[in-house]
Length: 238
Image (tube, rainbow, N blue to C red; front, side, top):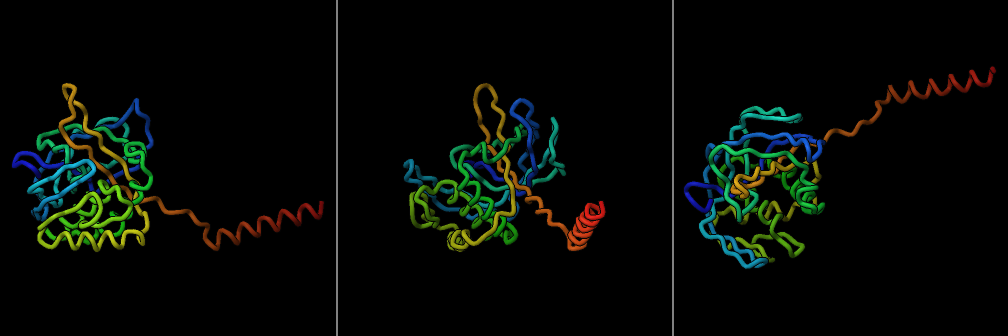
């Protein structure tokens, strides 16, 4: 958070399957409420491009939802937990409207989408206090902004120079284990609607568990085998 009035953008820790088209996008209004566990603060540096972000607050945020429109598979419950995704665009704390899109089409980077899905699948469940909340936020920023090919909060073009009160080391632990994680979530984006020709609120990421793979049960396979055997007998008699 760069000012006391606005927060940097967020990534939502909930989501939904959406397969619509650009001409009929569902929308939802969001209102910022508070910081779930509080913040850990520090400085971030991105050398590609050359930018320094001082006194950045990292942590989970809460939102409320209202006024859903269009055909959307999301069952909005009125509350959402969220993290920052964009350090260059502030999140407007007032009521804002967002359109639902796919993360793949929004980012245009399959590897980035895969890494974020692995981060969420492996570590979202461990977010339960200020340190872990800020650590997850730092790891998310690293995945989005790092261009060097390997992740780490103290190497590459995107670094956390400190202090973040222990969350930087915890973020590195998450990033070190990222390659071994599965991709248990599909992702979608809430794109902030432009007002008066300007987009002054952050776009948001949504997550939804991937549907399970349908595997025939042994009993079903046995019945299928009997059916084929019966067909063979009938053909033989004929």
